[in-house]
Length: 238
Length: 219
Image (tube, rainbow over all chains, first blue to last red; front, side, top):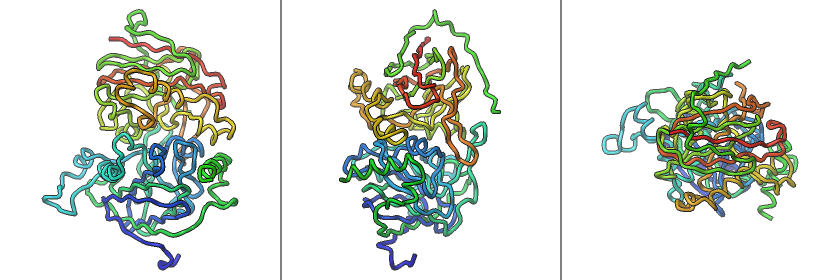
């Protein structure tokens, strides 16, 4: 898509956090600008912030352990909040959560603002909590998140393997918002990334109008469960 | 074929300080003190026991499925697994397990997710989240802390077999539990345990037959 057709674009520097209200029918393209990005994401219904992304319901409804084109993100109320309509990567994690300050310091050492200014180390948990606090939300609302651009696979015994060098510069995922969504983001490192130097990649957000899911929509029709999920979403907005 | 390690316990039920039965479709809530041992026993087999833990001192600190998975790099729970809190602290450690594998990805059933998973007209059927909500509405300790739906996070499903393949397919496989199998854990802090003994009637993984469980605590 030509750049000028986007409503707006904004880059999140590696490690930083972002939040905003995204209206239904909007597609956000997230692009890994440098390679090796991790973008932790949480979704809330701004009309009822008790309704939020539900990792278990998302996975079991679609019999999947990861997200890619055709998969959707469910709220705890049985509604489709957003859909992966295009994806250059094929796998986005939602099983592993985020790093906290102690994990970050153990892995990368300490780098505070006083000494490092905007090169200070940031972690996903604190970043998400800062953004949540702007809307009156807090630790009780910090549920299992999506980690766009990260791939973690379990072996037969369930041992988790973080796939290194998975996302390259230019990798992107298009997320269509099917509900009005309070979107909370952090571009801090993934908790299972074994790298020991702090160098989180920047992510670009590119917003465009796409309209609501049509009857022949790929995500709607990828399974009978999603057809019912979209019905639940559409009834909510009648 | 995946091998499961079976570890038995020497604790005797007649020495337990708590020994109760929870019927299918009922919630169960109790406080377990640091150092006490808590056993969940599958009385008739292949029952799903949806379980959440909270720090008794501050229920904002609660069981975290994603911390438990990522801090140990393991998807399934069995003997030796530490159940981590949202603050990254050990809440309980599994010390015996005659089933061999437990799930923490599948979450709890709710009337809303049942409309998605099975059919729109399944909404009135009983569900784990209804049991959780009922417990939080009626149990004194939950009311005291002002607990609500905000506090229902991704839970453990004891005795549930939810294998994930290397290519990311997730299935609700036939149960590997059986009558008399149990899992036992030591509390590493004072915790409140909230259980829904799952009433799911739409899923073959419990043979469409929800059954009672037995709960025991030892000092």
